[in-house]
Each structure stands twice: as structure tokens, then as C-alpha cells.
Amino acid sequence: TSVSLSTEGGLVVCLKEFRHGEVLLRVVLEDDGGAERGGENASSQNLTLRVLPVNSAPSFVLTQHEVALDEDTPLAVPGFALEVSPGGWKEEDQSLHFTIEQVGGPPGVLLSAAVTCEGPNASHCRNGSAGLSVALQPDRYGNLTLLLTLRDNGGVALGGTDATPEMVSVFARPVNDLPSFSTFVSTLTILESSSCVTMGRAYGEWEAPGQAVCDTSIPFFHSRRGLVTSVNWGPFENGIDDCLTCEQQTGVFLLAPLNLTEAMRIFVTSPNVSLPGGGLQLTLAPHMNGEVRFNVSLKDLAPDGSSLSVTRELAIRVLPVNS
Image 1 (spheres, one colour):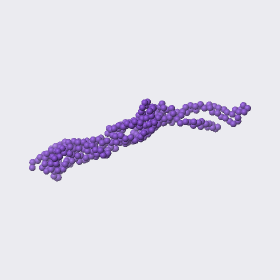
Image 2 (cartoon, one colour):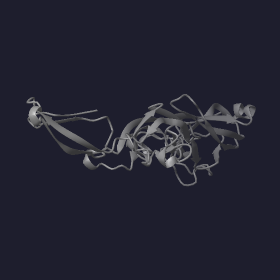
Image 3 (spheres, one colour):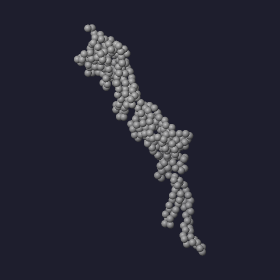
Image 4 (cartoon, rainbow, N blue to C red):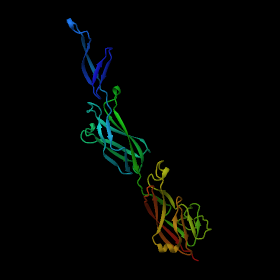
């Protein structure tokens, strides 16, 4: 915008922002002695001023710094970045691209994330806008911090800048998955009017009455350990057994007889399955026998209040004993 040279030889140049190029200047030195009688009061020299280009940082504006999505649901946000520009004067031919890396949050959650320029001539972002896409690993969730950087190909020579960073927060919300469980047997066979409290499983105890090693001190009461051999609340919903930041869900077993009248006849207290051990407890009605089939449902309870259940069938067969 201005150039000045002092009599001591100091040069002062004020440049316009982002401008560069070469200018030919004429430097004139004048004194105050005048030019009378053929005198000379000025002399001049040419000066070439060369302003070298220095790459300016590219720029963009985010429409939001936080995004949210649900587990197993990809996210797409058109126009996530606006006013995408390569930077300074005469840098419009530079190519631009965004990079994303995770810098915070649990590992193993993020499958992919990208910000891509939209519209024609996307490599130069001529449209000035870019969209965000985020995908998660199956069944994963958690809060993530991403470093989003816009880069150009202008380089960093002479102190130039070719990158501009921004932080983005991603909130990946969990979605409740079905629990699952397995049982040691699908049929329990016991004797009419019997009792048995076991401290562990014995070979054949579920199918053949008399095989279990029992405490029979409580009349008609059965407490059989280990009916349920495994419980899984869902992928990445079993607390630290799955990952350090995973949900620790809870739940309950519910037993519903397919024939309520028959169940009320045979059992004084309805059979139930306890957690976390997975044992079966029931109290028989004296001198009653028969078979009742139950729907055994494992119902979970997620931190967001949602609940899902899975059901298997269990038969309890009470064999008659002659009195």
C-alpha cells in the first residue's frame, strides 16, 4: 500500500494482505539547493521490489461442532462445512482435502469418518461446502473427539501454512440389543413330594431323580444350581467384560407357565430363576405330580430405560411316588 525510503537509507514497505509479485520502483533523492544556473537537485535509481508468495492457511466454517448418532446407524450431514476456501490471493488453483483422526474417546468404536467437498470440481471445493459422514463399528457406541483438518497443496515454504484444524465431538448413543442365555437342560425331572438343595451340579441330576447330592432339610423345597449356564445382556452391554466404557446392564428372569391351572396344582410357589447364579428354585405341593412347561424369559434393562427379552422353554416333570 505504501513504500518510503528515509535519508538514512531505511526502507519501509507496507503490503496489502495476501498480495505478492514484482514491482519496479524509481527512487528519487532530492535536496533543497535548487537547479538554478544548471544545478541538479535530484538523482534517481531503479529499485525492483519482489514480494515472494507465502502460502496462506485454508479456511472453513463448521455449521456445528457436535453431532449425534445411534449405534448401528450411519450419519450423513450435508453442508457440515461452509465457506471452504484455499486461503489468500491467487491461491484458488490449489487443491483441498479434509482429514479426520480420532483424538479422544474409546478405541474400537469408530469405523470411518470423512468430510468430503460437495458439488462439481470437488478436489478444489469450488462449491465452498463439504459434507460429513460417520460410521461406527457394529454394536459400538461412546463419546468421541475428532480432529478435522482442511489441507491445501500450497506447502509450508517461507513460513507458509497449509492446514487449518477444528475439533468435532461425536456422541454415539447406545441402542439396546437382545439379551441371550443358555440352559444346562430343557427338562427337569424330580420326584413327587421330594426336596433338594444342591451346592453344585452332579452328573445326570437334572434328568434322573436321585442323582443329585442334596440337602433335604426343607420339605418340598428345591434349589438347583446351574440351570442357566450363561447370560449375555447383548453385544458390548456386559460392562468391563466387554470393554472399559461399555454398559453394565441388569435384568431379571420371568417364568410363565403355559398351563397356569396345572402349575398352581403342582407348585406351592411358582418356579423362578435367580441372577446372577442362574439357579432354579421351586416348592412342590405335597403328593402332586405331573408336567408343566414354562416360558423362561430373560428381560434386560438398559440405562436409557428400554427393555428387551428373549424366551426359551423349560419343562418341569414331577414323577409320581406311591404313597
